[in-house]
Length: 397
Image (cartoon, rainbow, N blue to C red; front, side, top):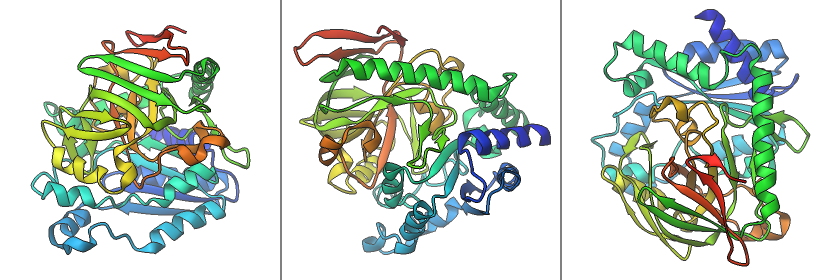
């Protein structure tokens, strides 16, 4: 166990975040992930990090805040959290965040509307830092006992945790002889797809099937991205490890139709089942779900951009996550198993300078999965021609 922890930590530090000698590293972790967090810290110092700042998230503190805080302060976040984030960008630091639930069902009995209004620990300044590309960052799965029990409820705790570890290491290509080389090859393949999509200059993308008929307009300069990213200083890094998507920034004013989530969404410590959203002229005018609808409605009501799209991402069948046919209840893994869209903030990197003032701005970014083998993805040209993009999750370009 110790050996694989070290190897996995090295992959995240050296290749995922690509921590540089002399950098400050910010690590966001959670209770139950201490061993991996310590391995990351050791790996970063061996790499030459100046300082590793670890922050553990305790979801019980959020629970008591939602229970007892005054109604008019639930959306308040002290300014120093945002200032800390901005300073990390100014210092050209690095960030690693460990994903995966640490206390499933802890918030099930809370007022759903109040829970949706408290978005902390997310701070809006992260969007600014990511868009300015001043930080090399990586989000990677951090297995824990409680997360494993959520994914595999019929297994004994130790067996469930071991299975989760094996699947996480598999999708992160740790069972390959040279994981970094495998990721470079996959990154190059994703970049190739993104280039071909960008060359087409589609006016819109339509998704049809499995209860979905949604047309997402694109901006004139929307471009597609995938694989490794670079900071403004030229530091290559994998923002998501694993990553299997190509994504773009849509026109937030031109989204019409309805969409049904093809996987449950785990957000705000709640599971959203049977999510459906209807859009008119870019805005989500109806948000329904079999479970969790009130919380999601409160989330998207945070600001004007919360009901508009900030991302469209396409995922093919060549990745390792979808083939497992497992719901991980973790956005990082589930969004890289299926095509998805995101309500809220957009990525500036996927649009040219002339359209920056048109992209969606919001304090939230909520990805949910809308793709499957039964959902066809079609590109629509400016002349109205229809071009198959994905069929049965296979590229047609």
